[in-house]
Image 1 (cartoon, rainbow, N blue to C red):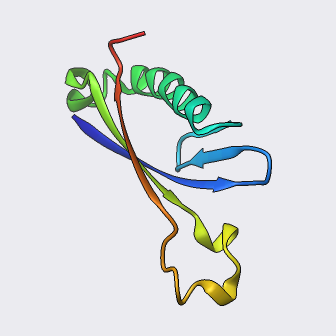
Image 2 (image 1 turned 135 degrees about the vertical axis):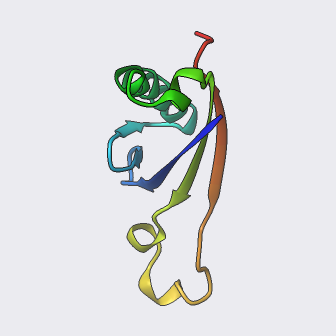
Length: 95
């Protein structure tokens, strides 16, 4: 299993997850999860020949951390050093 991390933010209308290679968005967290899965299938498929660990991986652990500096007012940072962490597991070999 490999682990891929995303920063997550909410722009008032939709959830946005991004890292150095992928940016996806969805109106709900469930929709966001689905788009992450689609994007990982495409991205990991391209890298398949280069990374041996990826070729064997059928399950991916996806960690998400809220980008609280963009979502939480500055004055409250000292009380909430993080807002939430979220972890999902995606089986790439399932539709």
